[in-house]
Length: 387
Image (tube, rainbow, N blue to C red; front, top):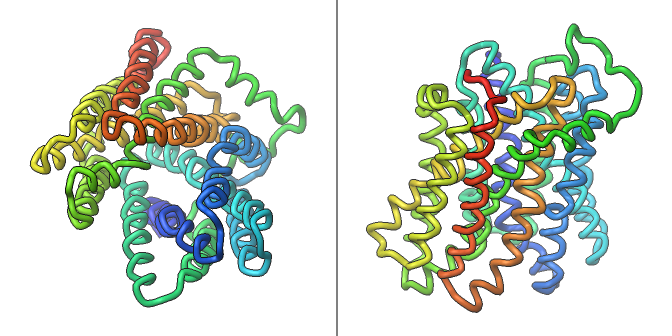
């Protein structure tokens, strides 16, 4: 099996599950009698802990000989944790099970990114090609689970999540290459396992890249949580809201498929800057409830605000970290962006929406502006080399 195909299948296995579980887990929890507060705690707990849990898992992953081995074990752990939700009942059991399952599953993508980035550089294919398969699978998980719930009980969400988690185990073993963690397939030297992580945290340029990316990515917090409610308040039907979300993800996939030549030409630091600029325009415009005709091109800016920032940050982190800490570096970057910063942005968005409605987007404009300033400062350090 060609490596690029195997990587695409692995990303699909990851995101076909999260595409169903992230939007619809609250539906199942509500059917089991959980209150809104309890659901919020269960679902958000892995997000807030990701900044600590993610790097710890990555440090553990770098102790293996092959990069796919920890992915197999994480997939097994995620499957068992999700399956336990069917037999252990009650808030605390579900909190623990969901926390473990989501933490393990959320670690798979950044660890797989390490393999994909190195293979894409070595073999000359675009990273975005296999990764975009994951984005398509995410849409399939979302739409597919929605169709299932039209005819099946809400426990189908849990069944889908368990089956999808098990698929990551088989995909890791059968579809991923046997790339070594360390050069010449050497076993990691036993010593202080946290030394590499501490070195990353002490590297000011590396942390500037992490925070700049994290702030721009976290500025999506208001959009992810309240865009549907804002558009409903504006008078848009659910069909149009779904189409607008699909437009954003579609722009993401198209950028991953066809933007590689431009990405290489401008360099990763410029990609993050463009992502910050796209965020400024997008959130500022959405704050003033533009008409439907303008919403579609604004949604297409997802290609910049998310995708350009995401792809640029992956390459920046790869360059700014030593090979021995590659897993920890990518996971720390993902954990900061998709963990504590997005969690804080999401929690803060609730009161802002209640008080100001769509004008709450302006807080995301401010967050993206700080991230953009960090990206500009990073580009001026002179430490980064072009592809």
